[in-house]
Image 1 (tube, rainbow, N blue to C red):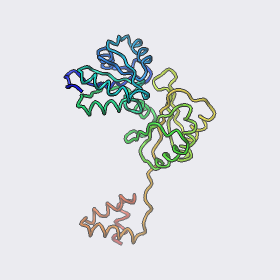
Image 2: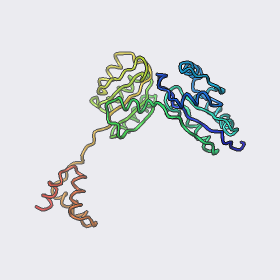
Image 3: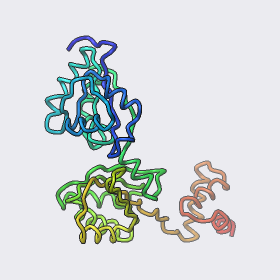
Image 4: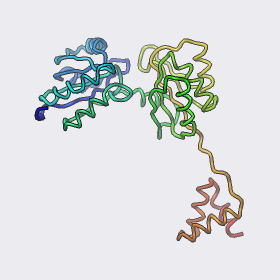
Length: 282
């Protein structure tokens, strides 16, 4: 591979999820000026450019799951040749459950600059509109396709206390919701976000059991992002009074002051500090 030119770089473009008006000014600028635009779906990119009244000045090439292994080294050569390559997927950020990671890693491995024109994300959009806690969350992407593998994965996630975000295909959402309701509990709050930012956007904020029934009775369509509340935190079982005294004494022996030792024990067992204080001094 040749030497790196200052102009050569990879630019990740955050594409609108559905509404073309969500395209940023920088997205428009890069799409019009990049030397090469690698697109997950070239026809969709052409439609988007037309909707935005943009002329894509560079060469458009396809870059999707089926050809990314072969095309990645070709695009790296282009970047090393001093050209700007823009990567755009069908919606949202490249690499987030979309093609892109392989190219980003390959570009970085040869010292090529990688930058981003931030844009919409189905993950954060669904989180924000879900009505569920957003301060801590875990993105799981697509669940396994086979039922046994999916249920195994869900069992591993059942105790996760952070809000969970999943992508799912419409023809699998019914089975996924049924497994979620069985594994997480039918009463676990959730929000099913369908066709975000598009004409038929729909957000259903219901317990998992109700969502499973909705999917079984209907014919869900469109792109789906599912947000599920984390597992409720459960306080550890309260020890008896003697065990609480022993726990405080153990911390004191380790160098904690009695005040701090009482606070530590109260926090660990979700008790009022005054309650532990009274037990220790009784």
